[in-house]
Image (tube, rainbow, N blue to C red; front, side, top):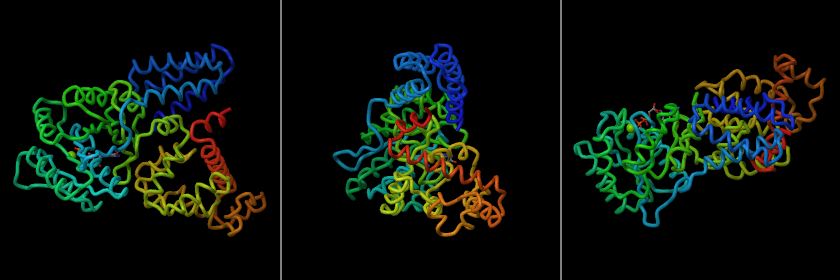
Length: 436
Ligand code: GDP
Ligand code: MG
Protein backbone atom coordinates (compact mmCIF):
# COMPACT_ATOMS: atom_id res chain seq x y z
CA UNK A 1 0.00 0.00 0.00
CA UNK A 2 0.91 3.60 -0.36
CA UNK A 3 2.45 4.22 3.00
CA UNK A 4 4.44 1.02 2.88
CA UNK A 5 6.15 2.11 -0.30
CA UNK A 6 6.53 5.71 0.64
CA UNK A 7 7.93 5.42 4.16
CA UNK A 8 10.40 2.87 2.97
CA UNK A 9 11.42 4.94 -0.02
CA UNK A 10 11.51 8.10 2.07
CA UNK A 11 14.01 6.46 4.34
CA UNK A 12 16.01 4.87 1.57
CA UNK A 13 16.26 8.04 -0.48
CA UNK A 14 18.45 9.66 2.10
CA UNK A 15 22.14 8.83 2.30
CA UNK A 16 22.67 9.10 5.96
CA UNK A 17 25.79 10.65 7.33
CA UNK A 18 26.20 11.48 10.96
CA UNK A 19 25.18 15.05 10.49
CA UNK A 20 22.20 17.26 11.07
CA UNK A 21 21.73 17.92 7.35
CA UNK A 22 21.06 14.24 6.67
CA UNK A 23 18.55 14.13 9.46
CA UNK A 24 16.78 17.20 8.14
CA UNK A 25 16.59 15.65 4.68
CA UNK A 26 15.24 12.39 6.10
CA UNK A 27 12.54 14.11 8.13
CA UNK A 28 11.51 16.22 5.13
CA UNK A 29 11.05 13.08 3.06
CA UNK A 30 9.21 11.40 5.91
CA UNK A 31 6.89 14.37 6.38
CA UNK A 32 5.95 14.28 2.70
CA UNK A 33 5.36 10.54 2.83
CA UNK A 34 3.16 10.77 5.92
CA UNK A 35 1.02 13.59 4.58
CA UNK A 36 0.63 11.79 1.29
CA UNK A 37 -0.50 8.73 3.22
CA UNK A 38 -3.29 10.77 4.84
CA UNK A 39 -1.74 11.11 8.25
CA UNK A 40 -3.30 14.10 9.98
CA UNK A 41 -1.07 17.19 9.76
CA UNK A 42 -0.94 17.64 13.50
CA UNK A 43 -0.08 13.99 14.05
CA UNK A 44 2.61 14.32 11.39
CA UNK A 45 4.07 17.38 13.03
CA UNK A 46 4.26 15.75 16.46
CA UNK A 47 5.64 12.55 15.03
CA UNK A 48 8.39 14.31 13.10
CA UNK A 49 9.32 16.33 16.17
CA UNK A 50 9.60 13.23 18.33
CA UNK A 51 11.48 11.21 15.72
CA UNK A 52 14.01 14.00 15.34
CA UNK A 53 14.49 14.30 19.05
CA UNK A 54 14.90 10.58 19.57
CA UNK A 55 17.27 10.19 16.62
CA UNK A 56 19.56 12.80 18.14
CA UNK A 57 19.41 11.00 21.47
CA UNK A 58 20.40 7.75 19.82
CA UNK A 59 23.15 9.37 17.75
CA UNK A 60 22.30 10.48 14.23
CA UNK A 61 22.42 7.75 11.60
CA UNK A 62 20.06 5.66 9.55
CA UNK A 63 19.61 2.95 12.15
CA UNK A 64 18.87 5.49 14.83
CA UNK A 65 16.37 7.20 12.56
CA UNK A 66 14.61 3.93 11.78
CA UNK A 67 14.54 2.93 15.40
CA UNK A 68 13.16 6.31 16.42
CA UNK A 69 10.46 6.08 13.77
CA UNK A 70 9.55 2.55 14.75
CA UNK A 71 9.33 3.42 18.45
CA UNK A 72 7.18 6.45 17.85
CA UNK A 73 4.81 4.73 15.43
CA UNK A 74 4.39 1.86 17.87
CA UNK A 75 3.67 4.20 20.74
CA UNK A 76 1.05 6.09 18.71
CA UNK A 77 -0.65 2.87 17.66
CA UNK A 78 -0.72 1.54 21.20
CA UNK A 79 -3.76 3.28 22.65
CA UNK A 80 -4.83 2.47 26.18
CA UNK A 81 -7.54 -0.18 26.35
CA UNK A 82 -8.24 -3.72 25.25
CA UNK A 83 -6.53 -5.60 22.43
CA UNK A 84 -8.19 -8.00 20.01
CA UNK A 85 -11.34 -9.68 21.34
CA UNK A 86 -12.09 -9.65 25.05
CA UNK A 87 -14.59 -12.06 26.59
CA UNK A 88 -16.93 -11.03 29.36
CA UNK A 89 -16.96 -12.99 32.63
CA UNK A 90 -20.68 -13.44 32.19
CA UNK A 91 -21.45 -14.80 28.73
CA UNK A 92 -22.78 -14.00 26.26
CA UNK A 93 -20.20 -11.31 25.51
CA UNK A 94 -22.36 -8.75 23.75
CA UNK A 95 -20.82 -6.53 21.08
CA UNK A 96 -22.64 -3.67 19.39
CA UNK A 97 -21.33 -3.04 15.89
CA UNK A 98 -21.61 0.56 14.72
CA UNK A 99 -20.48 2.70 11.81
CA UNK A 100 -21.59 4.57 8.74
CA UNK A 101 -23.38 2.90 5.86
CA UNK A 102 -20.99 1.07 3.59
CA UNK A 103 -18.15 1.13 6.10
CA UNK A 104 -18.13 -2.65 6.26
CA UNK A 105 -20.14 -3.30 9.43
CA UNK A 106 -22.07 -6.30 8.17
CA UNK A 107 -19.05 -7.89 6.51
CA UNK A 108 -16.93 -7.27 9.60
CA UNK A 109 -19.63 -8.76 11.84
CA UNK A 110 -19.41 -11.92 9.75
CA UNK A 111 -15.60 -11.88 9.85
CA UNK A 112 -15.59 -11.52 13.63
CA UNK A 113 -18.07 -14.37 13.99
CA UNK A 114 -15.86 -16.48 11.75
CA UNK A 115 -12.77 -15.55 13.77
CA UNK A 116 -14.52 -16.56 17.00
CA UNK A 117 -15.93 -19.73 15.52
CA UNK A 118 -12.45 -20.83 14.48
CA UNK A 119 -11.57 -20.44 18.14
CA UNK A 120 -14.40 -22.79 19.08
CA UNK A 121 -16.83 -20.17 20.35
CA UNK A 122 -20.59 -20.42 19.98
CA UNK A 123 -21.64 -17.23 18.23
CA UNK A 124 -25.01 -15.64 17.50
CA UNK A 125 -25.45 -12.68 15.16
CA UNK A 126 -28.45 -10.37 15.50
CA UNK A 127 -29.74 -8.67 12.35
CA UNK A 128 -30.77 -5.22 13.56
CA UNK A 129 -30.30 -3.23 10.37
CA UNK A 130 -33.89 -2.74 9.26
CA UNK A 131 -33.06 0.29 7.15
CA UNK A 132 -31.72 -1.48 4.15
CA UNK A 133 -33.99 -4.04 2.56
CA UNK A 134 -31.20 -6.36 1.59
CA UNK A 135 -29.40 -6.15 4.92
CA UNK A 136 -30.97 -9.24 6.49
CA UNK A 137 -30.53 -11.19 3.28
CA UNK A 138 -26.82 -10.25 3.23
CA UNK A 139 -26.41 -11.58 6.77
CA UNK A 140 -28.30 -14.75 5.94
CA UNK A 141 -25.84 -15.47 3.18
CA UNK A 142 -22.82 -14.68 5.30
CA UNK A 143 -24.08 -16.83 8.18
CA UNK A 144 -24.82 -19.76 5.88
CA UNK A 145 -21.31 -19.50 4.50
CA UNK A 146 -19.51 -19.44 7.85
CA UNK A 147 -22.07 -21.68 9.57
CA UNK A 148 -22.97 -19.29 12.34
CA UNK A 149 -26.47 -18.80 13.78
CA UNK A 150 -28.46 -15.70 12.88
CA UNK A 151 -31.29 -14.13 14.82
CA UNK A 152 -33.66 -12.16 12.60
CA UNK A 153 -37.31 -11.18 12.49
CA UNK A 154 -38.95 -10.43 9.16
CA UNK A 155 -42.03 -8.84 10.74
CA UNK A 156 -40.78 -6.79 13.69
CA UNK A 157 -39.84 -3.22 12.75
CA UNK A 158 -38.15 -2.11 15.96
CA UNK A 159 -34.40 -2.87 16.12
CA UNK A 160 -34.46 -2.50 19.90
CA UNK A 161 -36.93 -5.36 20.26
CA UNK A 162 -34.98 -7.58 17.91
CA UNK A 163 -31.75 -6.88 19.75
CA UNK A 164 -33.39 -7.65 23.07
CA UNK A 165 -34.94 -10.89 21.83
CA UNK A 166 -31.59 -11.97 20.37
CA UNK A 167 -29.91 -11.35 23.71
CA UNK A 168 -32.56 -13.44 25.48
CA UNK A 169 -31.95 -16.28 23.07
CA UNK A 170 -28.18 -15.98 23.46
CA UNK A 171 -28.49 -16.19 27.25
CA UNK A 172 -30.95 -19.04 27.25
CA UNK A 173 -29.04 -21.12 24.73
CA UNK A 174 -25.64 -20.44 26.25
CA UNK A 175 -23.97 -18.64 23.40
CA UNK A 176 -20.47 -17.35 24.11
CA UNK A 177 -20.84 -14.24 22.00
CA UNK A 178 -23.63 -12.09 20.58
CA UNK A 179 -22.71 -9.73 17.73
CA UNK A 180 -25.33 -7.10 16.96
CA UNK A 181 -25.24 -5.63 13.44
CA UNK A 182 -26.93 -2.25 13.19
CA UNK A 183 -28.06 0.21 10.54
CA UNK A 184 -25.74 2.92 9.32
CA UNK A 185 -26.34 6.23 7.61
CA UNK A 186 -24.42 8.07 4.94
CA UNK A 187 -23.41 10.66 7.49
CA UNK A 188 -23.95 11.16 11.18
CA UNK A 189 -27.47 12.25 12.03
CA UNK A 190 -29.42 12.52 15.25
CA UNK A 191 -32.00 9.93 14.27
CA UNK A 192 -29.31 7.33 13.82
CA UNK A 193 -27.64 8.24 17.08
CA UNK A 194 -30.93 8.12 18.96
CA UNK A 195 -31.70 4.69 17.60
CA UNK A 196 -28.24 3.41 18.44
CA UNK A 197 -28.54 4.91 21.89
CA UNK A 198 -31.76 2.99 22.48
CA UNK A 199 -30.25 -0.30 21.32
CA UNK A 200 -27.27 0.36 23.56
CA UNK A 201 -29.47 1.05 26.61
CA UNK A 202 -31.56 -2.05 25.98
CA UNK A 203 -28.56 -4.37 25.57
CA UNK A 204 -25.97 -2.91 27.90
CA UNK A 205 -23.25 -4.31 25.61
CA UNK A 206 -19.84 -5.31 26.90
CA UNK A 207 -18.20 -3.33 24.15
CA UNK A 208 -19.15 -1.06 21.27
CA UNK A 209 -17.06 -1.45 18.14
CA UNK A 210 -16.84 1.25 15.53
CA UNK A 211 -16.09 0.07 11.99
CA UNK A 212 -14.05 2.72 10.16
CA UNK A 213 -13.54 2.61 6.42
CA UNK A 214 -9.86 3.31 5.86
CA UNK A 215 -10.60 4.53 2.34
CA UNK A 216 -12.40 7.56 3.73
CA UNK A 217 -9.14 9.12 4.91
CA UNK A 218 -9.52 12.05 7.26
CA UNK A 219 -13.30 11.59 7.47
CA UNK A 220 -12.78 8.27 9.22
CA UNK A 221 -11.11 10.08 12.10
CA UNK A 222 -13.77 12.80 12.34
CA UNK A 223 -16.66 10.36 12.29
CA UNK A 224 -15.06 8.06 14.82
CA UNK A 225 -14.63 11.01 17.17
CA UNK A 226 -18.32 11.93 16.86
CA UNK A 227 -19.40 8.35 17.56
CA UNK A 228 -17.10 8.33 20.57
CA UNK A 229 -18.63 11.53 21.94
CA UNK A 230 -22.22 10.64 21.23
CA UNK A 231 -22.55 6.98 22.13
CA UNK A 232 -19.11 5.96 23.33
CA UNK A 233 -16.92 3.41 21.56
CA UNK A 234 -14.50 0.89 23.03
CA UNK A 235 -12.65 -0.11 19.93
CA UNK A 236 -12.16 0.63 16.27
CA UNK A 237 -12.04 -1.94 13.52
CA UNK A 238 -10.32 -0.54 10.48
CA UNK A 239 -11.90 -2.06 7.37
CA UNK A 240 -10.59 -2.06 3.80
CA UNK A 241 -7.00 -1.87 4.95
CA UNK A 242 -6.16 -3.66 1.71
CA UNK A 243 -6.51 -2.13 -1.72
CA UNK A 244 -5.11 1.30 -2.35
CA UNK A 245 -5.67 2.25 1.24
CA UNK A 246 -3.42 4.84 2.74
CA UNK A 247 -2.19 3.20 5.91
CA UNK A 248 -1.82 6.62 7.48
CA UNK A 249 -5.46 6.45 8.55
CA UNK A 250 -4.50 3.93 11.23
CA UNK A 251 -1.96 6.35 12.66
CA UNK A 252 -4.37 9.29 12.61
CA UNK A 253 -7.22 7.28 14.12
CA UNK A 254 -5.12 5.98 16.98
CA UNK A 255 -3.63 9.36 17.76
CA UNK A 256 -6.69 11.56 17.28
CA UNK A 257 -9.50 9.37 18.57
CA UNK A 258 -7.68 7.77 21.46
CA UNK A 259 -9.53 4.46 21.26
CA UNK A 260 -7.58 1.27 20.57
CA UNK A 261 -7.69 -0.25 17.13
CA UNK A 262 -8.75 -3.84 17.70
CA UNK A 263 -8.82 -5.52 14.30
CA UNK A 264 -8.09 -4.70 10.68
CA UNK A 265 -10.09 -5.95 7.71
CA UNK A 266 -7.86 -6.79 4.78
CA UNK A 267 -10.23 -8.02 2.09
CA UNK A 268 -13.78 -8.87 1.21
CA UNK A 269 -13.65 -12.50 2.28
CA UNK A 270 -14.48 -13.90 5.68
CA UNK A 271 -10.91 -14.91 6.65
CA UNK A 272 -9.65 -11.40 5.88
CA UNK A 273 -9.57 -10.12 9.45
CA UNK A 274 -6.58 -9.74 11.74
CA UNK A 275 -6.06 -8.71 15.32
CA UNK A 276 -4.50 -5.27 15.36
CA UNK A 277 -1.06 -5.65 16.90
CA UNK A 278 0.88 -2.37 16.85
CA UNK A 279 4.36 -3.90 16.39
CA UNK A 280 3.20 -5.90 13.44
CA UNK A 281 1.39 -3.06 11.76
CA UNK A 282 4.44 -0.87 12.19
CA UNK A 283 6.74 -3.41 10.61
CA UNK A 284 4.28 -3.68 7.77
CA UNK A 285 4.06 0.09 7.43
CA UNK A 286 7.82 0.20 7.22
CA UNK A 287 7.85 -2.56 4.65
CA UNK A 288 9.33 -5.39 6.68
CA UNK A 289 6.56 -7.93 6.25
CA UNK A 290 4.85 -9.75 9.05
CA UNK A 291 5.98 -13.31 9.58
CA UNK A 292 4.25 -13.76 12.92
CA UNK A 293 0.93 -12.53 11.56
CA UNK A 294 1.25 -14.91 8.69
CA UNK A 295 2.08 -17.83 10.94
CA UNK A 296 -0.87 -17.07 13.19
CA UNK A 297 -3.27 -16.71 10.32
CA UNK A 298 -2.13 -19.95 8.77
CA UNK A 299 -2.16 -21.92 11.98
CA UNK A 300 -5.81 -21.12 12.69
CA UNK A 301 -6.86 -22.75 9.46
CA UNK A 302 -4.07 -25.09 8.68
CA UNK A 303 -2.54 -28.07 10.27
CA UNK A 304 -0.77 -26.72 13.33
CA UNK A 305 2.01 -29.31 13.09
CA UNK A 306 2.88 -28.43 9.54
CA UNK A 307 2.91 -24.74 10.34
CA UNK A 308 5.35 -25.37 13.19
CA UNK A 309 7.61 -27.40 10.93
CA UNK A 310 7.72 -24.59 8.43
CA UNK A 311 8.50 -22.01 11.10
CA UNK A 312 11.32 -24.19 12.35
CA UNK A 313 12.69 -24.52 8.85
CA UNK A 314 12.51 -20.77 8.31
CA UNK A 315 14.41 -20.25 11.54
CA UNK A 316 17.15 -22.62 10.46
CA UNK A 317 17.27 -21.11 6.99
CA UNK A 318 16.27 -24.47 5.50
CA UNK A 319 13.12 -23.29 3.79
CA UNK A 320 13.21 -24.92 0.35
CA UNK A 321 11.17 -25.08 -2.84
CA UNK A 322 9.06 -28.00 -1.68
CA UNK A 323 8.04 -25.98 1.37
CA UNK A 324 7.29 -23.11 -0.93
CA UNK A 325 4.96 -25.23 -3.08
CA UNK A 326 3.30 -26.57 0.06
CA UNK A 327 2.79 -23.00 1.29
CA UNK A 328 1.27 -21.98 -2.02
CA UNK A 329 -1.24 -24.79 -1.75
CA UNK A 330 -2.21 -23.78 1.77
CA UNK A 331 -2.45 -20.15 0.85
CA UNK A 332 -5.29 -20.71 -1.53
CA UNK A 333 -7.40 -21.55 1.51
CA UNK A 334 -6.63 -18.31 3.22
CA UNK A 335 -8.73 -15.68 1.54
CA UNK A 336 -7.52 -12.80 -0.53
CA UNK A 337 -3.97 -13.20 -1.70
CA UNK A 338 -3.08 -9.58 -1.36
CA UNK A 339 -3.47 -9.54 2.36
CA UNK A 340 -1.32 -12.64 2.67
CA UNK A 341 1.41 -11.44 0.36
CA UNK A 342 1.63 -8.20 2.28
CA UNK A 343 2.78 -10.22 5.27
CA UNK A 344 5.64 -11.92 3.53
CA UNK A 345 8.90 -10.03 3.74
CA UNK A 346 9.83 -8.48 0.44
CA UNK A 347 6.49 -9.26 -1.13
CA UNK A 348 4.46 -6.27 -0.01
CA UNK A 349 5.29 -4.42 -3.19
CA UNK A 350 4.14 -7.34 -5.26
CA UNK A 351 0.98 -7.43 -3.16
CA UNK A 352 0.33 -3.82 -4.05
CA UNK A 353 0.47 -4.69 -7.70
CA UNK A 354 -1.97 -7.54 -7.43
CA UNK A 355 -5.54 -6.37 -7.42
CA UNK A 356 -8.11 -9.08 -7.11
CA UNK A 357 -6.36 -11.26 -9.57
CA UNK A 358 -6.47 -15.00 -9.56
CA UNK A 359 -3.30 -15.70 -7.64
CA UNK A 360 -2.99 -19.37 -8.50
CA UNK A 361 -3.06 -18.52 -12.17
CA UNK A 362 -1.06 -15.31 -12.11
CA UNK A 363 1.93 -15.05 -14.44
CA UNK A 364 4.28 -14.57 -11.53
CA UNK A 365 3.21 -17.78 -9.85
CA UNK A 366 3.04 -19.69 -13.13
CA UNK A 367 6.68 -18.78 -13.73
CA UNK A 368 7.71 -19.83 -10.26
CA UNK A 369 5.83 -23.10 -10.64
CA UNK A 370 7.40 -23.73 -14.04
CA UNK A 371 10.82 -23.16 -12.55
CA UNK A 372 10.25 -25.44 -9.59
CA UNK A 373 8.71 -27.98 -11.95
CA UNK A 374 11.96 -28.33 -13.85
CA UNK A 375 14.05 -28.88 -10.74
CA UNK A 376 15.11 -32.31 -9.59
CA UNK A 377 13.73 -33.39 -6.22
CA UNK A 378 17.20 -32.84 -4.77
CA UNK A 379 17.36 -29.30 -6.05
CA UNK A 380 13.98 -28.54 -4.58
CA UNK A 381 15.19 -29.65 -1.21
CA UNK A 382 18.54 -27.92 -1.44
CA UNK A 383 18.32 -24.59 -3.25
CA UNK A 384 22.06 -24.09 -2.62
CA UNK A 385 22.82 -26.75 -5.24
CA UNK A 386 21.80 -24.39 -8.01
CA UNK A 387 25.08 -23.47 -9.71
CA UNK A 388 25.34 -21.70 -13.11
CA UNK A 389 25.18 -24.87 -15.20
CA UNK A 390 22.13 -26.12 -13.34
CA UNK A 391 20.50 -22.74 -13.78
CA UNK A 392 21.09 -22.97 -17.53
CA UNK A 393 19.37 -26.34 -17.56
CA UNK A 394 16.44 -24.91 -15.54
CA UNK A 395 16.10 -22.07 -18.01
CA UNK A 396 15.76 -24.55 -20.88
CA UNK A 397 13.44 -26.83 -18.98
CA UNK A 398 11.10 -24.12 -17.76
CA UNK A 399 11.03 -21.99 -20.89
CA UNK A 400 12.15 -18.99 -18.86
CA UNK A 401 15.07 -16.76 -19.80
CA UNK A 402 18.21 -17.04 -17.69
CA UNK A 403 17.53 -13.53 -16.46
CA UNK A 404 14.08 -14.59 -15.27
CA UNK A 405 15.46 -17.71 -13.60
CA UNK A 406 18.09 -15.69 -11.78
CA UNK A 407 15.58 -13.09 -10.73
CA UNK A 408 13.20 -15.63 -9.20
CA UNK A 409 15.99 -17.49 -7.43
CA UNK A 410 17.34 -14.26 -6.07
CA UNK A 411 13.92 -13.21 -4.81
CA UNK A 412 13.49 -16.57 -3.17
CA UNK A 413 16.89 -16.39 -1.54
CA UNK A 414 16.41 -12.92 -0.14
CA UNK A 415 12.89 -13.71 1.03
CA UNK A 416 14.01 -16.76 2.97
CA UNK A 417 17.05 -14.95 4.35
CA UNK A 418 14.88 -12.09 5.51
CA UNK A 419 12.37 -14.51 6.96
CA UNK A 420 15.12 -16.25 8.88
CA UNK A 421 16.45 -13.01 10.32
CA UNK A 422 13.02 -11.75 11.21
CA UNK A 423 11.92 -14.92 12.90
CA UNK A 424 15.15 -15.32 14.84
CA UNK A 425 15.47 -11.78 16.01
CA UNK A 426 11.78 -11.07 16.30
CA UNK A 427 10.15 -8.52 14.04
CA UNK A 428 11.62 -5.04 14.01
CA UNK A 429 14.83 -5.89 15.78
CA UNK A 430 15.70 -8.00 12.80
CA UNK A 431 14.81 -5.20 10.45
CA UNK A 432 17.19 -2.59 11.70
CA UNK A 433 20.12 -4.96 11.69
CA UNK A 434 19.31 -5.88 8.13
CA UNK A 435 19.29 -2.31 6.99
CA UNK A 436 22.67 -1.49 8.47
P1 GDP B 1 -22.17 -1.85 5.95
O1 GDP B 1 -23.13 -1.01 5.18
O2 GDP B 1 -21.39 -1.02 6.94
O3 GDP B 1 -22.81 -3.03 6.60
O4 GDP B 1 -21.08 -2.39 4.91
P2 GDP B 1 -20.95 -3.83 4.23
O5 GDP B 1 -20.50 -4.83 5.21
O6 GDP B 1 -22.19 -4.14 3.49
O7 GDP B 1 -19.72 -3.57 3.23
C1 GDP B 1 -19.72 -2.62 2.20
C2 GDP B 1 -18.76 -3.07 1.13
O8 GDP B 1 -17.43 -3.04 1.62
C3 GDP B 1 -18.99 -4.50 0.66
O9 GDP B 1 -18.85 -4.53 -0.73
C4 GDP B 1 -17.88 -5.28 1.33
O10 GDP B 1 -17.52 -6.42 0.59
C5 GDP B 1 -16.77 -4.27 1.37
N1 GDP B 1 -15.80 -4.53 2.45
C6 GDP B 1 -16.01 -4.64 3.77
N2 GDP B 1 -14.86 -4.84 4.45
C7 GDP B 1 -13.87 -4.86 3.52
C8 GDP B 1 -12.44 -5.01 3.59
O11 GDP B 1 -11.81 -5.15 4.65
N3 GDP B 1 -11.78 -4.96 2.40
C9 GDP B 1 -12.42 -4.77 1.22
N4 GDP B 1 -11.69 -4.72 0.11
N5 GDP B 1 -13.75 -4.62 1.13
C10 GDP B 1 -14.47 -4.67 2.25
MG1 MG C 1 -24.77 -3.49 6.83
